[in-house]
Image 1: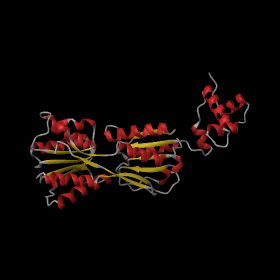
Image 2: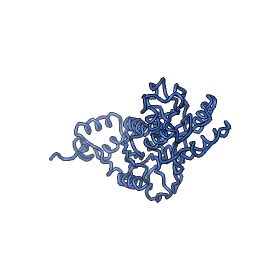
Image 3: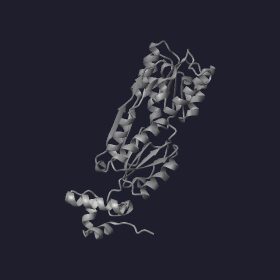
Image 4: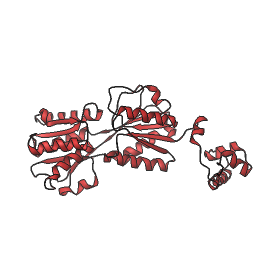
Length: 330
């Protein structure tokens, strides 16, 4: 069995002190550039791999960051995770992703595993829960809440989207087209994003003097099936509406799927506004009007907050606006 290569191995091989080797492999400016290059080259030749656990025990930053998201079925989470992973790779950060399925128990286990790895920071889409996690779960971990916010036992950074104006713009657009019975499909009230999007829809309906009947505000656990079922109720006449506004990615895809199932077309008498902007939205019946989110910008901001150099800065809140993109479906 080949012996493992350590800092001391490299030091002995080059006849240099192990402290100099350690500093060079950490890119310390206190080591001359030619010496640093020599050490790093020899380390690569010998197959040296940095021991993150040992570094953590010495108090060094592990450069491990965590990402907690509900799933990868939702295209938004998948695209965000992909963009963030590439940025982390480019910046010498190791990203570990956990899927919580919006379950607080799974979220707790994921945080425990990240603590075991001495993770330096985590970005999380918090699971809906009426309980608050204990502060010890986050001990030593820079925490950023993403898209949603939940009550935590400390002040945490956050990155959210400001989609209220886009939802209001969607209602104004449909009202100007003569629609009075507009149905909103969105997430339930346990989600901060669900509460805020519903409030924006109701406010815009009232501004336009349109009725806000209970049947026209459909909220539940956001999912593809939820969107499909509620859209099917509109198509069958069980819900009397002439237009749909979606308040979530999976909801939008499910509702669109239901609308297209009959004859691969959205009925001519039904206006449809989706949420998110997958590539195929541009091609269906001349394009799906939708609310678009700046995924790459969100990933770049997450990287900025997760980078170890920013780990001890004061709490920051960042909000990014969405955009209503008008196409043929309305």
